Structures are given as structure tokens and as C-alpha cells.
Amino acid sequence: MLQLVDLHVKYGQIEVLHGIQITVNPGEIVTILGANGAGKSTTLLTISSLVKPSKGAVMLEGAPLHKLPPHEVVRRGVAHVPEGRRIFGTLTVQENLNLGAFTRNDTARIHQTLDWIYELFPILAERRRQLAGTLSGGEQQMLAIARGLMSQPRILLLDEPSLGLAPLLVKTIFQTIRNINASGVTIVLVEQNARAALKLAHRGYVLEVGRIVLEDSAQGLLANPDVQKAYLGGA
Image 1 (cartoon, rainbow, N blue to C red):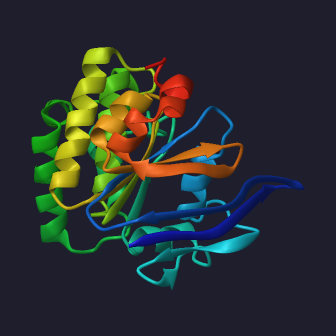
Image 2 (cartoon, rainbow, N blue to C red; image 1 turned 180 degrees about the vertical axis):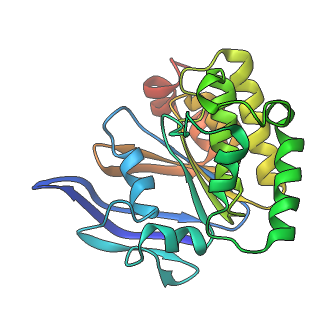
């Protein structure tokens, strides 16, 4: 469904992705693991066309994404929930969700999507008229994911959805991600909580200093001694 082909990305003269290859099949959750600075967020930004590759390609079902402007990538069915949430704090919950549907004009389906989102996140339904900036961190993360879902994506890119959240909220967010995937949405997940990400994912890639150094099933990565040592706190 999604392919990154020999993808190179530079910031100025500094290359941060060195020819990475990633494949995502329909219906999968694929996680990208790596330390800070490995290039995980850059990978998602390049899929979204917010960052342009210096070489290589991002392909969605055989068609290039990397040549399109970001809003057209959204129209093709890719939504990006960025690190740090990036909600509009001075707008209400409902207004943030409305903005998530900016590429759509099918009013009836938009209302159906909104109803589904309020089923996924009942707290957002309760607070739909509240300013987003007054929500808790966990509620803001729910809103960021919900806003992404308003575009009815086929692929959802999630960058550090558990960042800064209490353990109980992390559990809630990850269960919701599982439910979203079960509805038919393919997910690419960047997550510092490697153990939780691998328990959720079907497959994973390990990115080190801009290079893919390991690819395996999630269970295979969980059992890998090198992954255990580097990302899971030992065996």
C-alpha cells in the first residue's frame, strides 16, 4: 500500500535519511523504532510531503506522493498526527474537528465520521464546545488523533502519541489505536515506548542514524536480544 523506496532526505547539506526502504501493507500497524535523532519524525514528515526527499520516492499504491503538496497527500488518504499534537488551542474541540475535514465535501459522511469519533472518544463529545487549549494533555492527544480521522484516511501516521501521558492514559490511547486499525485504517506508528508499540504492531523497523538496521515481525523484534538491550531495558 505504502512504499518508501531508497529514500534520502537532507536538511541543508546534512543528510538525515540514507536510502531507507519501508513497506506497509493494507490493514497493518507498522512501527518505526529508534533513538532520538534517528530520523523517525523526518520519515513521517516526508511521507506527508511536508519534507521533500533529495532522492528516492514515496509511493502510495504505485503512485508517487512525494511530488504532491501536503493537502493533496491528505486527499489521497494519508493523515498525519504530529508529535506535540499541534491542536488549535483558541478554537473549540468541534472547530478543531471541523478543520480536520477541510479536504472533504460529503456532508452526510462527515457527520457519520464525527459520530464515530465521538463514540471512540466520548470525553470529546462532552467537551465539544470547550476551547482545545484548556483540555488535559491526554484529551489533547485524543483530539489530535480525532482531527486526523476526520479526513477519513486510509493510512494514519502517528508520531509519539503517548508522549507526556500518564500510564493509564497511554493504555487508553493504545487501545483506541487498536480499535482504529480494526475499523480498516492502516497505521504507521512512531513511538518511544517500544514495548507498547511492538505489542500493538504487526511489524516493525529499527532506524539508527537515518538507516534501517533491522526489520521483522513485532514478535520477532520483541524477542531480539539487540532490541531488548537497546530499547526494552534488557531481556
